[in-house]
Amino acid sequence: MTWFFIALLSSFLSAFAAITQKKVLFNLNPVQFSFYLSIANLVLSIPFFFFIDYNAINFSNLSVLFLKSLIGVAAFLCVMTALKNLQISNALPLLALTPGFVAVFAFLFLGEALKLFEVLGLVSLIVGTYILESKNLKEILFPLDVFFRSRYHQYILAALLLFTASSVIDKLLVAKMNLTPISLTAFQHVYFAVLFFIIYFAFKGKLENNSSQIDKTDVLWILLISVLTIGYRYTQIVSISIASVALTLAVKRTSVLWATVIGGKIFKDTNLLKKTIAVLFILLGAILILRD
Image (cartoon, rainbow, N blue to C red; front, top):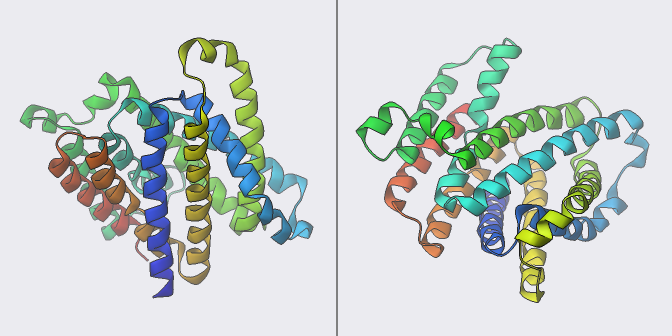
């Protein structure tokens, strides 16, 4: 059961990373925050470079990783933009729909048949989303309308699609292109830092007119978020090395529940009981889809 407690630790670290991200985003623009965090992540991930098997590094896997990093940067910016403008208990639970998107895309484009538990999982995901986003019976009948009415929910939808593509590329890099999780994490932080550097300075003039300057308190929060981020990524890798990916991710996704309940209390979100019930349905769906 060692893997379970390591995966659960990863879940807690991920949840508190999201909560602290929300706090910092009250003061900083998503692009500013993403840039500063990418620099902190790069600095703190330097030790990973001492444990890389450089014989397995080549132009092909680094090129694919760069493509994956482009997708990851876009997804992260979408999530941070939504997290800044939506209640944390509205934004984060929707990200747990990723397994459902992966299952549907695998069925449509790879011809992979959906098993009974996967179908039940998709139904549970849909029910959870209905409860989360609906305010009354009329909206329960038309739950997806929120993605068309709310610009920030559209950012979540975009992030879901991008994370789906990113997950497929992760599997390709690790399973087919001999890139270890440590190598992937280390070089991805290099790419993230470079890409966010370009984005930040491309929009720096506009950002200076519309956002606050970073202060000492923000720096301390960003360093904490960086430690939490590297911590949950590393513990996830360790858990995967002991148990299956599906089992690890099923436990890891409980981070959505912790972030919704704890973050919702901290930031005084509305309708927390309803949202917690919705999260439980979404997590059940994710676990059913990810089960062995």
